[in-house]
Image (cartoon, rainbow over all chains, first blue to last red; front, top):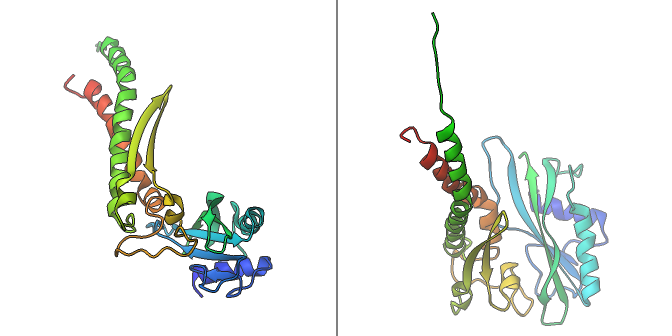
Length: 126
Length: 139
């Protein structure tokens, strides 16, 4: 499994979110529920000769009210917040999850759901 | 036998005072160069700033300022929805469709992650030039 898939499995394991139901890889699905989370990778990762690599990750969370969306965003954020080391299968190479941006609101979707975004930098050895 | 050696520190202390005077302006200049590079990278290097009408791209502005001993630089994209498009979400809350190849979400944050050491080097280089000016072997 690739990194993003393992990370999403880690979030599924530690929350009530279910992959492909209200937890998605890449982006919100067209028919996604009003309460859901999407996890994706974005540009900016670096590879070093020393074997220390980085990979930026974005978590998008949405829900029907501002406070619920914020709470959902923080459910995932609290799992990743400055976390040192992952014992979860497939994530053992990650030795630190640095917070780039705590959850912040970026607007509402067509259905009126509030959307929060948060960004992380995974520091890893593989 | 005795070897006598002498060094006049006046030139050194004078140089230090000159350096102290010139460092703020050199840092400000270095910051401007760094921010110009940052803006260029955001607009041109993949994932570059998305272009639809060109309004978002044209709205990118840099500014540098000094307050006390702090020199700061700002890159501003002053259009509605700039933040949400940067996060990959359109004004309708759906994933934003980037029409031009090479453009995409996180056109600013990705450059800060990828090239931050290049930008700080620009500032360092500008400051080192002041030292070089006053402490090169020719002075």
